[in-house]
Structures are given as C-alpha cells and as structure tokens.
Image 1 (cartoon, each protein chain N blue to C red):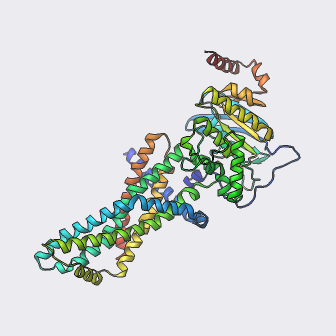
Image 2: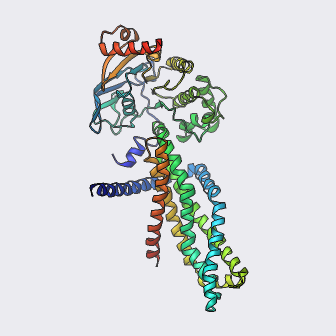
Image 3: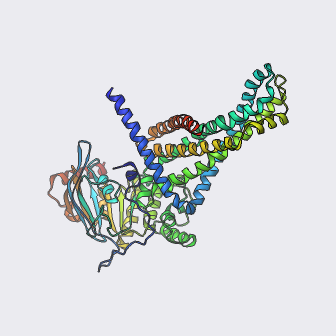
Length: 270
Length: 254
C-alpha cells in the first residue's frame, strides 16, 4: 500500500449523500459478515481464517486475551487495515470494493482519540462541520443533544485536557453518535477506567442499544461484555472459537473459554 | 554495506512518499476556500511564533554583514558600495535561507510534534473513521499557510536586515556611510528580479518545510520518545532540503 493510501485509508470526500441501507427492517444498523479473514504482521499470523456474523441492530461483544487480534479485527472493519486474504461484507457489499453502497460508521477508540486542540463541542460536531451536513446552529443543537445522551450536557466548551478518562470516553461516544452511524465500534471502551467509570460507560452503551445501531464491542472486561451484549464471541489465537448469548457463554463447555472466564472471575474476586 | 544500502533505500522511498504527499496536498487545495479559517489560524501561528525572533535575527545579521564588509571596503575607499553588497546578500541569500531555517526550527518542529502526537494517539485514525481526509484536514492548510507565511516573513527579514545594515553603516566610524547613501546604492544595485528570486526561494522553502514536517509527523508511530525523535528528524531533514534546494534554485535562476 502506498503511503498516501495508508495515510488516507479508505476515506473519500462525502459530497454526495449516503445511500440509505434500509431493507425492510426496523433498525438503522447494518449486517456485518467477516469471511475467512487472514492478517499477517511479518511472520506473525494474527487473524487466521476468522469468521464472524453480526446481525443488523445487534450488540456483539468480542472478548479474548490481550494480543489475540481483537483490535486488529476492528481496524479491518473500519478500513484502517486491509486483509491479506478474506473479505468483510457490509449488508452484502465487500467493504473494499469500488462502488459499494456507502454506510456511516463511527469508532470509539481505546485512547478516546479526542482532538486535543478542539473543544468538546467541536470534537462532537467535527463530522457534521467537515462534511457540511448542516449549519452552525443545527450543529450546536445536535452536539447538545448527543452530549446529553451520554450525560455530559453543557460541557461543549470544555477542552479534552480538562476531562477525566470516563468523560473523554463519553465525549468519544457522543462524537460517534453525531455521525448518526449504521455501525458503531467500541475498542476497549473501559480500558484504564476505575470500576465506577466502567459502570457508567456500561450504562451508556446499554442505553444506546435502544437506538438499534449495530454495535461491535471489543473488550477483555467480561463483566462489561455480559452486561451489554446480545451475543458474545471469544477470539483465541486469531480465530473466533465460541459464539453465543451471555447465558450460553457462561454455560459453555469449551475449556479455553471456561479458563478465560474463571480467570477473570478470580481476578475480580481478589 | 547492507545497512547503508537499506538506509539509502529508505531515504529514497521517503522522498517518493513525500512527493506523493505533496501532490495529494496540491490536489486538496481545491478545498482551500472552505478551509480559510484553518489556513488563517496557521498563518497567525507562523507569525506569532517567528516574528519576534525573526526581527532580532534580521537586524543583527544585517548589522554584522555591514560591519564585516563595510570595514574592509573602507580600507580601499569602496564603502559607498555597502548598500548594494548588504542588499544583495540579504535579498538573494541570507533573507530566504535564514527565514526558512528559522521557520523550520520554530514552526516546522511544532508541526511535526503536533501531527506526530495525533498519529501516536490515534487522532489520525479517528479522522479516517469520520471519513475526513487527513491530507485535506491537516496537511493542505499548513502547506498553504507556509507558502504564504515564509515569503512574507522573508520580505520582512530582508527589510529589517537592510535597516540593521544601514544603521551600523551610519553609526560605525570605520564605515561612515549615511543611511541615504546606503539606500541609494541599494536601489542602484538590487533589481526587482533579485527580490523575485527571494520570493521564489521562500515559496519553495515554505512548501518543503510544511510537507517534510507533516510527512515526518504522519509517519510517527510508537510513543512520546518517537515524537521527540520525529521533531529532530523533521528539523534536520528540512535544513538539509533547504540547503540543497537553495543551491539548485540559485543555479537555475542564474
């Protein structure tokens, strides 16, 4: 990949409107299908024939130990990384194909990735402003609405450096919501947060489920996973080894999943 | 030997990628009218960061140039030519080169640090996921601001440098050339074409500084240590390109 492709990624200017993806369903979310996805970093085979299906409007949690390829999978779905083989289908269209239907996607980064030179309000309204979706007054209204959704009403003028870790994560979620996304991706949304803030973020994600946006949450925090998921899947050594509802994952007989769950519970019990 | 070859290969690949980034930035200049606020903000940043130090640098460079050459010229009774000599030196060489070096050190390093930190802390990835082109959003406004700011600062440095030279020439008893005589000789020797050369050089240096520092920032990965290294690398590379291009432009304008 040339440098400017890598710099620009898959981005294009959105002068045209995004095509509606709606089939006859009651969700703005999209269907995600990952087929035989492989990724190498040098000789390290990170993703191995990974298969994943996420239904429209579903909240799917991917968990697994650190370094198993969770974030790499997420970066493939955002288009920040390209697969060595395999493909990702969004509502049946290959994510990397020319002329595919466009869809709106937003990501909540592990580090929050707020723009430090912009205020909270400017961060949340950046997509609207840069794509000239609406005027400044409407943007201010949308920003206020999204900040209220994550419990940060009235924080428009604060700078990211003045916020706590949990507040930054919530601003990042508000920024994602301002895109009015068909798909929202959370990369370790509670990493580095204390239990109180973790619970707050968990509540925000649960509250947002009513919007019926397809959500993909990557975490190694199983408590959060069980709290927010419609279904969960565990990645181990680059493969999705178990998929199921929270109840079925808890009751699994797969020894690797059992070992991961019991280790997490022991850590929490200490 | 292999390590040296690998290094050369990396450098040449970097030149190619940097050129690609420059072309991409030029392409995105079509979006300049709706990014005027960002371009103006960067212009102000250039001015704020460099104007005081540029004034100090220019007045003393002009002064020392007059002091060094004026006293020697006076030994041969040629002190009347001081205005032209200081003027040509400032306008054709010292003004554009010193301004570019100053901007690279003062603003270019800040650009590399800012863009590098944005890359390290996933802000560039966030831009991409928001479907905002990083070249349009980050590089193009800095490139245009630099292409305007460096020539403007260069003209300012030329004027202040000449004032410094004229001042020293008039007050130093070994030289003893009045400011009026200095100005007359300057007007006689320095032509409009020389000023244009100065502007051409400054525009090219401005482009090189912005693209080099943005490129280094965009290629920064790792952590805070890497950001520090990126700053150093951006300044060293900018200096190197300025010196090489200065020769090539001078040669082609002769």
